[in-house]
Length: 584
Image 1: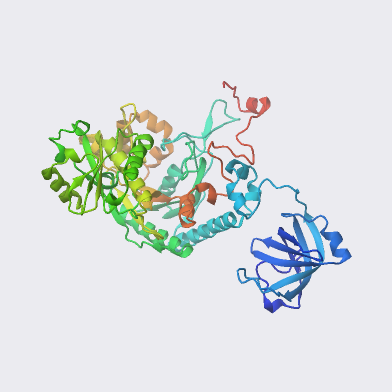
Image 2: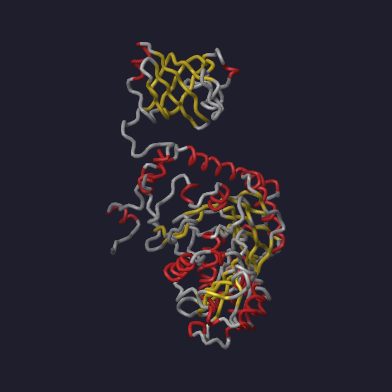
């Protein structure tokens, strides 16, 4: 028999009445009623009420009790006089005859556990005391959910015939779109490892090695600025790759894995495969973003041609995007002013023009004087606007107009409560551009540099690089990019040419990606894969808005681990060991 407990705090019921049991856990609450005390004893499985009767022996043992101390109790299970149907153990209580202090707790806690006060505590304080924060039932269940989801993913991948293989953490630098975390080598002065931004090269090498289907729940490291939906420094993904596979083969796997996991761990309605497919170009035109939230019914339309001869100076020689919102004409003037302020201050717009259609389809408000009858009819035809519809206009350079319109669409959906409730809407974004212009005006990879260009070598030799599409794809869920993948470029000469267009030389390719380049010359099968983000998947299923709520020990908004005090300074000797001098 276990020394500390015979049962957990969530399993006792009327069946155990009359039995002597042992329980162990944390004191959540103490209620002193003079001649009797009641303790809510909590562990991972639930809460049991403990009764402390007025006996000298027990009273002595209770003197050191505080909330959140860790104790073991022995006692008899009895029927509870005032039953609590809100908890599984609410029909019974345990009369203690022995209490053992297992772990004392300071009298003053940095914040209250399992109360509303915890949520009002500063986040940095909660992260500093994360071991206490994780005792909160809500957060604790999120971490248990994460574990359950990982188990489901592993079971599903095993069922589909994938082999779990671990790849190295100390690797080489690779252009994955973010800065690397570098690790200096003690044995090789002046040389560095890089923590992998993804197991990209290794999983492709596994395909060259003859493995049919690989997967792992892989840690990835990217030196990026933190966001609510992006953990700073490190994240985990379900990484998988398949030999002799096309884009369609990968889609079939994604459409089987993703709905299965969401259905098993959520009560919300879940889209089933096949997922709706949206080209990158269509996504940018209709939603202004490449990760559209399909719960939002609003669609962006291009009204540039309609305003080709406008007298409105703000619209002249500009790309014009319009968003029509049914019934929004009923909103007060302040709503439109606030949306304009948001567009300018948060999205960088030069302004947000608008008009209303009244019950008789007459235009009023905003820029109504620039909307004549002919323009109004064209706008109604374009947008399908009905009476009591409001129209919002964005005018700017093409890409900027798209981006701002996308932000306005999202905000309108939120402020007008347009999003469909309790549903997961999935889509596949396909046909990404292979290349894009960098901020410096040079050609750069748009997505994954190891992707297969559509059209192969012919496209690379004969097309404008900015017109080349790639076999790259994302899975999007409720406005979040949840997975990325591609058909891989497995031809060494095609690989060299693809990198040359982005400014790399053959020598660069051979030196920086030598393992892949040389491996591809020894009989490489066509291969493809993807990587759903584990953290983001758990965040969506847990219905959280911040990744820190589903990670056991997250870093704060400044990428600091306040619990472990990382990053931190190191000793001179440690720096000498790895041949580094600081210049800060």
